[in-house]
Length: 326
Image (cartoon, rainbow, N blue to C red):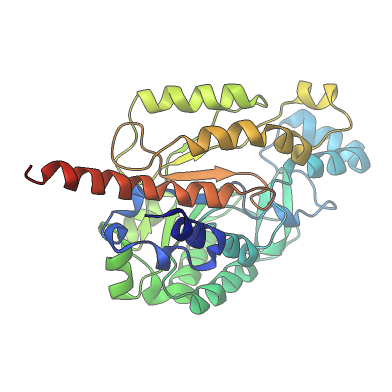
């Protein structure tokens, strides 16, 4: 496959799946390279909301005493995206990391959270995503629903019912081996990973939790070293995520009072994207699948990850040539 077609698929990413070569249409989706966004809804954090109940007692106490200090600080270090879901999908993102929470004084509505809660509700975000999918019928989105801060059993029931009703026949069943061609033939566009075993066991439309490899470090070299170490142990059989996201801790924040997550990520992107460009997808032990990043619109992250799929194509062509008689 020539550079021109690779640029065409990677440059205009709103429909990149529909433009992949014929040879890749029957590859299981967990053997393709798929760009994803880490903490996809953190672009709309509510700086006036309290910190999560799952945060440390000390942080919650400080938040009660000095909310004018804690909340702007958490906002700076918890905002990891800058675009609404529709725009992330236009960039080429096909994996969404949705961390769902019940917001104090939020009534029956569910929100998202990362340190603090979001302004946008789950209903609003998923309805926006459904409209985007209607306009892009050959694109497939993997939605990872997790964390579920303070959700009750009834909240889970209502959330799953809403997901089933909204996406309906677009949902891909968890017993399937999804490929682009098989999903297209059935009109399926949505794979929902739901990190609650009780709900997952009751609904064949829900997939189990997708493993997420992340280093929990602010140092990009340590992130790369961690991902390399994980690769040596072998990749999971199904979907899994390699996280390029950096993670700050209290000491890092205190030592960098004028920085934020965006600045920290921007400085590390060159190294992280260089590592990404050297990867290849596929079922082999070191094959990547979903690759997640913060601030997905700041670089050519999506283009780089999508372009990895052409390494599968080159391998298939090389294998065919080796099988030809001399």
